[in-house]
Length: 88
Image (cartoon, rainbow, N blue to C red):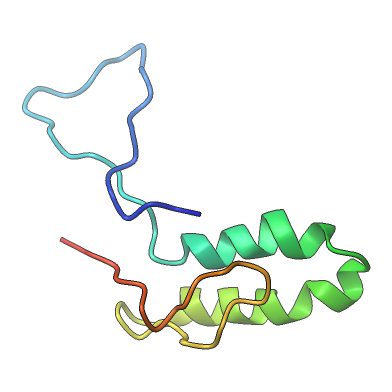
């Protein structure tokens, strides 16, 4: 499951611009994407297991920040109403 903390940077042959201190952060819909890609696609018949998680992932991506869907996950054991996403 995704963390809400910073995502580690990879080494780049160009390095970082001077004064660049920002760190990439996990997207607010990462858990929905994880459920879709790593669970629903591989649980039995994808024609039956993918549509529900895909609809929730798409709904999350189209929503505004802090208005993500609160419907329960199909495969992940996470309570979306209790999940706290910290955006700066």
